[in-house]
Image 1: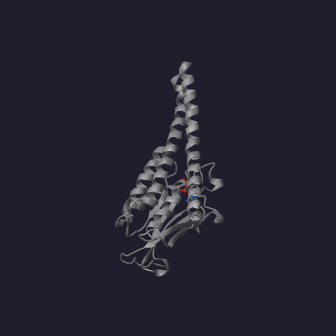
Image 2: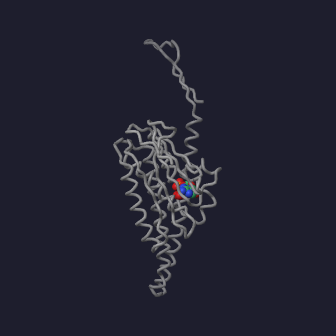
Image 3: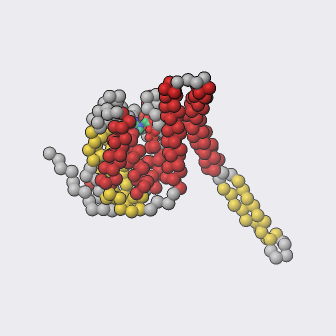
Length: 274
Ligand code: ADP
């Protein structure tokens, strides 16, 4: 605790009292420690692909000096490209993470059905080009409502979540994703949106932690690339919208991400039960 005492004097300079202020710097110190830890991890994660790029660039230079066949250099160039893309992704995520905290949010009507359909189209086109045509994902969307949200931030949330649902699948298995909306406990003032996948799942004890910055499930890091910031961005964006996000098991196997946020629109029709 820091104490600040200022003497109070009258016009003649005689001391007539003192005003004091004190504030708790523990919170400040904690914030500084958080920031240092954050910068450390960010620097480490940027450094790793940079070392790869530096190493393979040196190799290319040697090959060029030796007059090696350009064909033989393709794998080296590809590794440099992959390193560059990982750095780009991390820088994009770091910027999005900062924006999610600091940027002003401007609420507007956002047609979630349109946004999500758009992301699905974009992401699956991408997948097909990259994979040379693996099993196509099976995705059902909605119907989803119009919500009040910051359009670009909420788009980022669904892009991250759909990206994860497509990514964390077993090799060779198509992604199966269901995105749906409802009112939790029939409360028309809250909207719940679920993104359920049939992928590799998140162990129950990890579920509360995957929203922490840079937290990745250890068992996933070997086979799946990532920055560990996507869900931290989602959590921040939802907080800014007075909403929440959590992870649960999908009863059919896999993960179910559950978003809840305030809703002022027309109540959704009750689900039909048969
Ligand atoms: P990353 O860039 O590693 O994907 P995220 O913040 O998006 O970072 O996710 C954090 C971690 O949570 C991931 O590394 C992964 O282990 C786990 N995860 C997130 N979404 C899913 C999912 N749909 N299925 C299985 N695991 C997931």
